[in-house]
Image 1 (cartoon, helix red, strand yellow):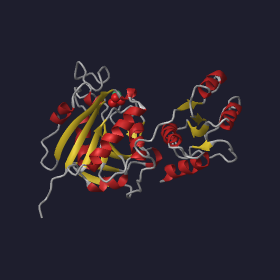
Image 2: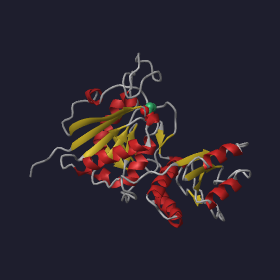
Image 3: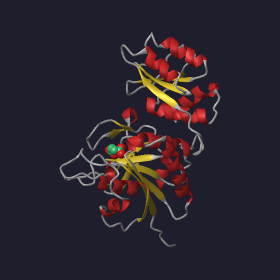
Image 4: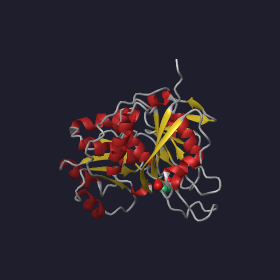
Length: 325
Ligand code: SIN
C-alpha cells in the first residue's frame, strides 16, 4: 500500500496574519491583508509531511467582511471539500470577525474533511509575529483526519477551538481567543494534536446559498434611547437580537416596543450582554430565547433561519438545539 502525504489547501483572505507595518516593533500601526499568501507560505519551515497548495480569495481587514463574503467562502470551501486532491483546508482570516465567519461556515457546510480557520494578533512584519506558528499548527490540525469530526475549528496560540464556542476576548494579546465556559476543543504542540472533547455531530443546518435575512443587534444600557430602538425596529430589519441585562432582561421603557414588534411579525431574540451563561427566562411569551448563544452567534443563526423560511414556531427549538449540540 502506498502512503499518500496529506494535501492541505490554504485559502487566504487577509487579516493581521497578512499585515505589514513600517517597523518590526510596530504591533498596531499596520495594514491588514497587505501581503499575499505566498509571503505567508514563505515564513513556514519546509514541509515534508504535507503537500500545500494556496489560493488568495481576498485581502480584507475582516471588519469589512459582509454576509456576501461568508457566502463566497462557503462556495469555495464546498468545492475544496469535494476536491479529491484536498485532504484538509486552512482558511486564513482577520481575527476581528473570525468567530462570525467560523460560525456561519459551521452552520452551512457539510464537512468530510477538516476545516481550520486561523489568524494572528501581530502583523507578519512584527518581531515575534504569531502568524507563522498559527499557520503551521492550523496546517497540522487540517492534515489530521479526526479533526473533520469536530465541525469547523479555529487554531490559534496552540489551542483548538470549536466554532460553536470560539470568541475573541482580548484586544491585543496573542492569547486573544477562548471558548468561554466550554473550554477549548483541544491543543496542538510540536505536531501532536490532543482533544479535550469527543467528536461532535456536525451536520449543517442550512444550505450554503441560504439567503441571509437582515437582522440587527442592540445592547441594553441604563438610559437607552427609546427613539433609537424604535428607529431600528422600523428600519427594515426582519429580526432583532436583544443583548439584555443578566438573564436577558429588558429595560422597562423598551419592553413594550419589543413586544409590539414581535406582534408585528419581527423575530425578537433575547440574549445577554453578560458574556456567558444561558438565557431562558420563564414566562417570556412573544420572545425567542437565545439559550446558550451569544448575541453575535444568535444573529447569524436568525439571519439564516429567517432566510430559509423557518416557521416562527420552530425558532426556539432551533436555538435550543444549536446551543447544546
Ligand atoms: C482583521 O480582523 O482583519 C484585522 C485584525 C486582526 O486580524 O487581528
